[in-house]
Image 1 (cartoon, one colour):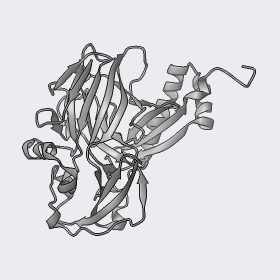
Image 2 (cartoon, one colour):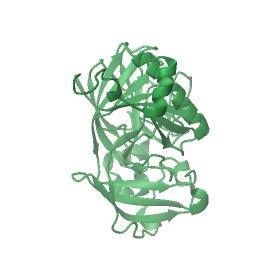
Image 3 (cartoon, helix red, strand yellow):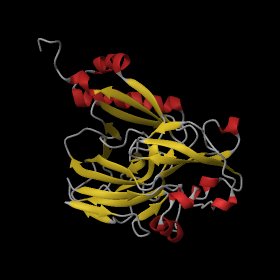
Length: 343
């Protein structure tokens, strides 16, 4: 079955996950969902980043926080139950409008050196998968993203040239996507966790397959914080934020040992760890990778530990989302069971 889930005031929630949220759509395992995901940064340049439907969401959704992210959903999957794994295949992620915004925010990693909140608005060439900066402006009125849904009218700031002669590669992905957490009540959309959420791994895009451990009946998947590009680290505090139209396939799995968010690409498994510091995030990713190699590939603990040291890359996912993130990249081609030309 093919379902369409537009982002409207009735189908979004702003800034949180909550296991008590009612589903706005119910699908069966294996169904396709065409979903609209709106950037909460559309107000950075409303003349470029908003259309009528986005403006309606900003105008009509007043229940916001504690986080800033706009999330579409939740989507319930019939039969999903605690202990299962929800597989989310990302088949399409297309920019809704040909513009995006980056905010250098007060929670950015180098804010102590820059000292200003600055917005840079980019124009997107979706055919060439490139972007270039149109202008930038400093914002000093309030902490911009601490008031979710702030709309900066064009005449209220001085738009200045930015990044002349520079282009960036586009790699559209969903910065925040996850199932309902086990914790009752609202959970902020800012820190990532074992339900997924604000993982901010730019590889969660087309061709990627996310696995989320299910905590509540139906799984209750929410999708948002769409990005069109981001570097590992996301050090200014945000990515290149832009609304996306996605196509997802949702499948309930009962044959996988995953109890934490795992991303699969054509060549890799990426295991995510989180912590209050990079040291904690690194240890979490390492321990989780050690466990996965034993559970999924049948390695002994000693063999898994050796393999990790010679073949697993540990990469900083992000350092700006309250809980910091590291992901372990395991090359699936290590486990083909063949060796040399004779095999």
